[in-house]
Image 1 (cartoon, rainbow, N blue to C red):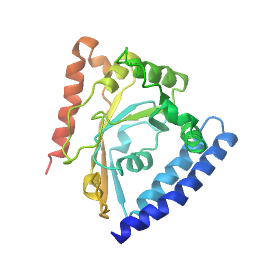
Image 2: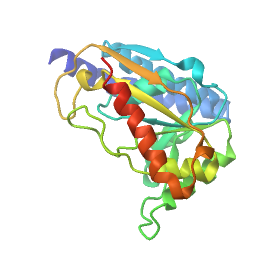
Image 3: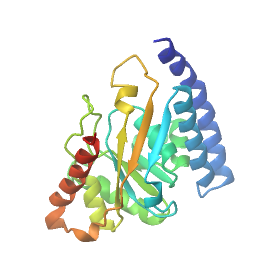
Length: 236
């Protein structure tokens, strides 16, 4: 419990410092490379302060300069800093467009390369992914991280995947890269006021070429990747 509150107390000033540096980094380097690296340092600080060790398997399977759609299971708040620090590719996550206008915080997210989308368009289910496709086409070195379950798992088991990331892959030709996260659920479960120092492991799998599928077989695309997660998580 003491460790938990120490991390919470550290998080605020560390994040404020990170926000300041990330924004300055964008001014120095409009391309965003410096801001992204500073964001990764912020993630490392969170992991170190929380006494988390990070193990990454399969880094050789991806090109740090290539564009991917990374999909990962989601069980803990530590998933985000683990992926952000563990994967070297310039990357961003989805955020509501309204956050862009939040002073300093939203500006820092923009500077770090996150994707802002308008989620108010309920008329078209894929409107958000259309926006992301356009954003990614502007910078072919910028990758996307999506948690396809849509929310955190409460029991540590991988849940059903939403199809948005896979349709985006089909529409853009950008490969899907599965990242299986292990140990984050043990580190901190949702709503738990306790942090358990442990090792978080990222298993990076081979990129999945969307050319193997079509819009008619998109359900198979989703199912094949979901099975890969189940097999990896169930390995003894």
